[in-house]
Length: 253
Image 1: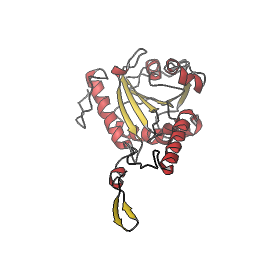
Image 2: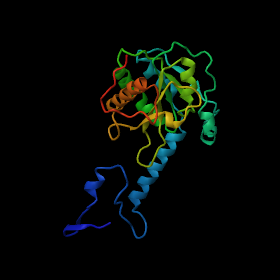
Image 3: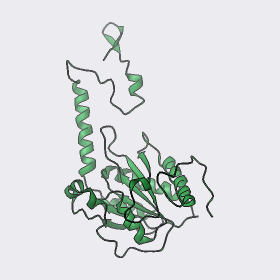
Image 4: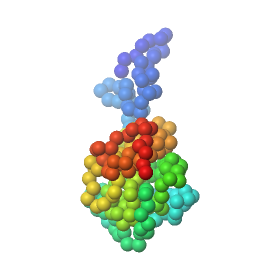
């Protein structure tokens, strides 16, 4: 890393202005042929945070307390067919299937919500409740909203069977995204219209990188979700044919 002298024994770091604009690791410097000790230690901290985000169990009780205050019904708790975290990580297929959908209410709601731990329980613990609060506020009173369903050891597709069992018009999955070395608590929202088992990723829309203040804000994510929801209802499907209209919401009868 080059430095610019500003006086006897003092140097200006030319990377500092750029580093302030991004979470990426740039201009880390060097000590001989290696990184400086501070950069190595910072990397190890980020690796540990990423591992914890994947492996630390979701505090379901704390999450349920927050979700119960949304006013859209008592939260429901399910698990996927993965019996534990090890199986979940080794067998993605098991995380895509609920252990059971027996007893789920079926009232044919317009919109349902599945909150899944995914690959970052930290993201769900920190962002799911405020994100749900913003979503409920954005959706307003014109749509019927199902009680939220919390699913552990879960991947996005687990909501397809749940959505079908509950008669949902559209399901929104809030899920912890795969942690990286810059962000370990990023939340994603996946929208699937007319959910049924067998839907593929091309039939979904994703809003990612939700982790304010550095990432997408709850209000912005909720606005995008609302636009996509109305678009899906007008189009009759979600996925690659559905685009965010950036505020131009189609009229739905």
